[in-house]
Length: 138
Image (cartoon, rainbow, N blue to C red; front, side, top):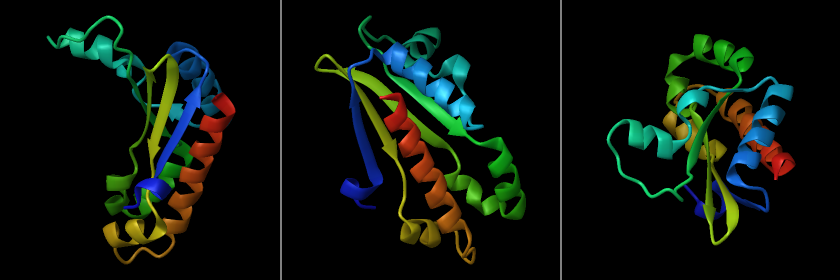
């Protein structure tokens, strides 16, 4: 894992809520879905389960999926599932909305899912697409 290559960092002038809404629309336009729409707001989720966070805490953990690609991929090899949840983290810090997205290099993917030569390139394409959708929403 290489932090400078695998950790995507973006910043937006939009509020967390506005970025999340705009990103969600861009995802839909590209046939992606948010799997955890009802519980991506971590302040709400933590509080519902007895957690205590301050009112200004606004972390959203957005689980991104493209069902029309994931269905074929996981049917072909369920070992791929370990790398399928893709989370985009959105939070505020120093008055700006911060976006973080962790992806993996082709070498990391190949090391985790053995004997599956097509998967690293396919997953790398998805990682790149998610990064471009983040940029579009910023």
